[in-house]
Picture 1 (cartoon, helix red, strand yellow):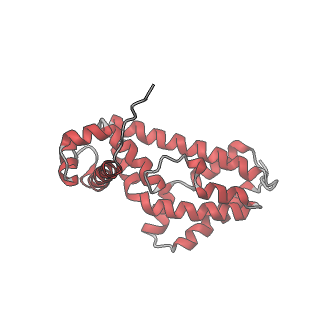
Picture 2 (cartoon, rainbow, N blue to C red; picture 1 turned 120 degrees about the vertical axis):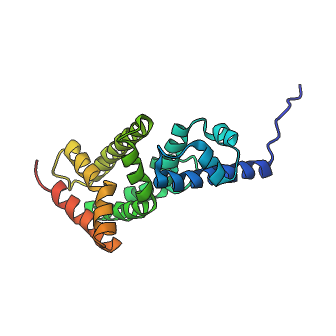
Picture 3 (cartoon, rainbow, N blue to C red; picture 1 turned 135 degrees about the vertical axis):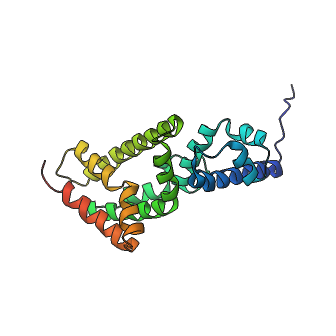
Length: 211
């Protein structure tokens, strides 16, 4: 029996991708200034050049738009690829030694922070007054802690970590907080290379110390 297959036009797929990108770009601008709470979806739609119904059709809600914006800003694209499958993770796992692994992660961290610092700081600010933003901020914190627990386990496999996995994950989680980048690079004017060395030297010193 013949099976009817639904044809999906590559042109329509590309148009849908461009529409989604335009909405995300508009939200990235407006959720930073004037801010998440002060920006209705009608304003996002106008900035993106689409109908507000299109925003709802693509994202469903303002909260979901914010959540996906945070995710896309984190990884730098909208590919459906888990963080653990990203190339920088494979790079880190292929390296030997505590400091080389930390150095590769520090480079990734600096690149990520440069891309998302405005968005994440705006999210942190919005979280103080908006329940949806607070939930997404909390999820971001928890996701980062889980990621650092995985990284701590990889570092421990080098045999150079002298503290517990829990303590190692906590140290990594604190050191990679975007507010460190904000203060040191944006406020104090550190070159990115100095920030990366600060991360590697600081974390390596603590992880190599006994509990």
